[in-house]
Image (cartoon, rainbow, N blue to C red; front, side, top):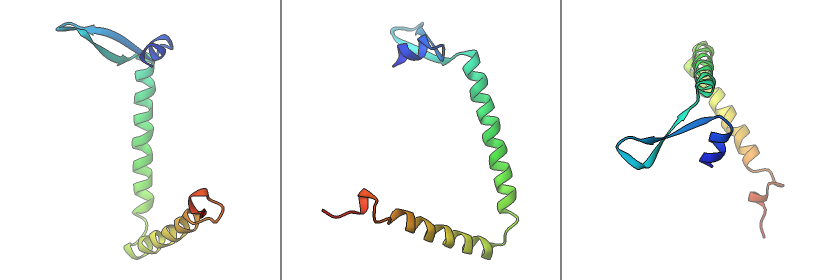
Length: 87
């Protein structure tokens, strides 16, 4: 697995100075850029979703949560879902 990631240029592998049997794995510079871009996108989404949620009252959020729970129950109990079939 590690050698595949190294060959694809996703990570670099180097020996640890104090232990020749162990290696350090690091993202390449290009993959670090991807990682940081993902982190920025994640932070943006979290902030935007928090702003949306803050527009609702506690009572509204309680009702929305109940609605979502009931919808989830429908999905979890679909009769054609193999997890719900007997036999």
